[in-house]
Length: 408
Figure 1 (cartoon, rainbow, N blue to C red):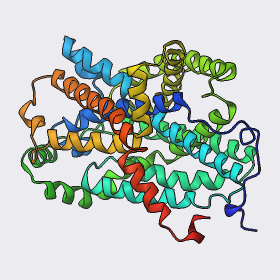
Figure 2: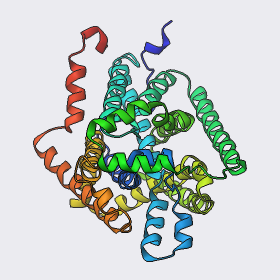
Figure 3: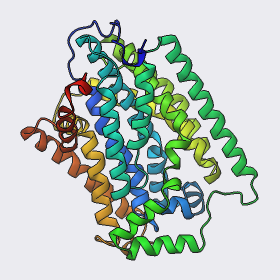
Figure 4: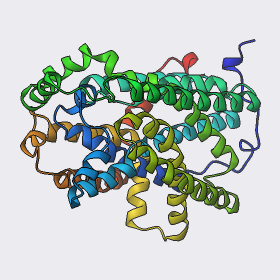
């Protein structure tokens, strides 16, 4: 029997009231987009741009903060501490929630699963590939697309099997990051940074090279640039399935159950996540993998609880509307913020990264705030006229033109 195309059996969440779009989920997606930029902005503004992580940029600001505890280095250290890996984990988990919502909708319609969802995932893979080649080497969409295909199949298995896979993936991720961290600590170099001529050449290329030069760099170093989704594949699988589990438990509902679960996430996520992230951050560059792929997801759960706590207690207004609109156009917002930063920072554009090199972090904060504000203003204005973001609309338009048999 072809279980990968089976009709999903109705579940408790599938039999609930008719689907209403969750305002909290949209707000969380908007926060995740702005927060992800808070991590990526340091890549765009670094000497060597996207290649800086491969050729010797300092990944952890802890050493510089301790060596020069000035206002600028302290502000940068705190900002990067709060952002690095946390919002990526949040965004990943929310993709899992979206997959659970698609599964529930298919169950209510009596549709086959994965059915047309496979085409959505393949379209996301194509979008991610284009984004990787033309815009940003550290794209996350390709990894999400592959993980979505795996998790879509897993949703046809029993919940017991899903939970077994989820916790096995978590254990594998922790074990892999611990082993790699041990290897970095014991290696003769004692650091993941390389520096030297490679760093100087990367800095020159991103400051003076043309657009096609950077496209060529991504293609010629595709294996190295695509190492993150491979390295973090177990974490992606765990977070997708955790998102499914939290959604089914009612963690995002506007009711007592949702508030209770979010309260627990707030307490445990911040209570365990803050000291754990502080330890891995102060551990320095050799602890980067544990910091980003083990400690950060714990704090991301606290962020869900924190955003939920605030959203439950404030009246809906311009700020919540802006974040909600950005969440509804999350794919477009993610790509657009990267396009803007590429044009502003790299040499073929305004070249601000080279122009402001060595001036401190304040202009980086300003750039992050300006791009974030632009997205938060543009998203609600766009949705006043159009029902979805431009890339979301393109995806829908493309999928509706598939042959009838492929959409079943």
